[in-house]
Image (cartoon, rainbow, N blue to C red; front, top):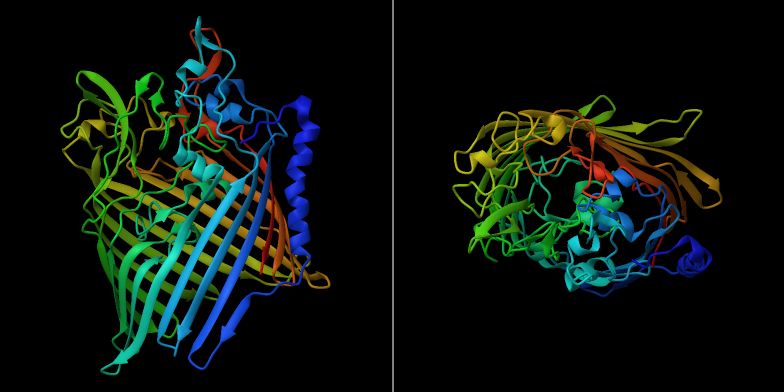
Length: 555
């Protein structure tokens, strides 16, 4: 990102607002999505242009910015009012159906962020006498590598690219799909690390960090796979999924605004003096598949059962090992996890209730960096059970709003056992990998978190204009989950905003976004600067609140 300073704030503001004026002009048009129809084909071509402008809302907290593990993300945009994103994103979708049986779909997105450049910024002071923060940089050359630049400056990705065929055989309907697409099993909404859909697809964690309250399904990145589904009877259906491609979560990168640590996740070459080693990954093609069955028990109630064999898309991070007598740090991805699940969708009065229960055998657990391990290329693993319950409430008309939705979701995780291999690395209370207690980031046997989404709406506030007030809150209620990811006790992330939609095509949204977590006590750097000595959850993001302005149009 391009760093704006107070002395050059006017120029930075002018540059930031120029794309916004272009976006406003685009939104004022009457462009329509393109559709076509022939005797055999029905097709479409849709485009969505999104512009996002963001400003830092708080100055750097010295207790965070003086920590060499976080200073590069803090000082990339160091002052309140600095532009932290100035980004255009174009999504294009092309598809069609031939004789209602054969369907094709291709989608892709590209982006450019005017706020970013590839310069890595460090705390300008000294960590120790004669030792600058810059000398401890996670990027030894002072610049992002190509992988980070692709995600934050200019880049793009292919999304869907599949062919689908549907027909009837022996009086039973079936559908076969081949190619890049997304499958999302179960009914968990906001806790992807604890749901039945865990590791069913890679998640765009960069987009998720920038938009709290986004349903996990909307963050899934399509991957190559084969899917088969068939309706055996009017009440029973079965499905099969086989993956043809490895997947890894796309996570906030060190030295960028919303990153949790400078030396994570990909592209950095140094962790406070410890060099980067090669990551441990599954091969491109691995034995990843799933089967499911659903039963329409009543006209309104559906029960699903699931089995999946999966490689995890979230890494243990970071792990340490010795090579040639010297240490290095690296990321590693767990393999060969068995997942069993059951879900229920049913009405609850005028509301919708969703439940899912899943058991994972051999899943990755919260792991502390360490050298004493039975398998030096892996972290701790174990068996866990996850329970998710959610309710969707349609809002009726009141004096405060006309309509809208309210969603509440509860997630509970319990660690049943820890595998003997690398057990000493498990960062859980009562285990060798835990250097304190839950307030120091150690996992607890059980953990519960809550997510809320509240969106009141007002229709036809002006001719053609509907308004809403989207807001979200995710909070760790009790305990720290033993699995990778999740929400720690006492931490929360939130967003509150207002949105206006014109003619159901053009949207302008303004949000305030932030997070809080419990920091520990304080200590001093060798140069005498005060820093936190730890905490529970992502306390390093406590000062990175920001204001997001998003304009979007479809054509």
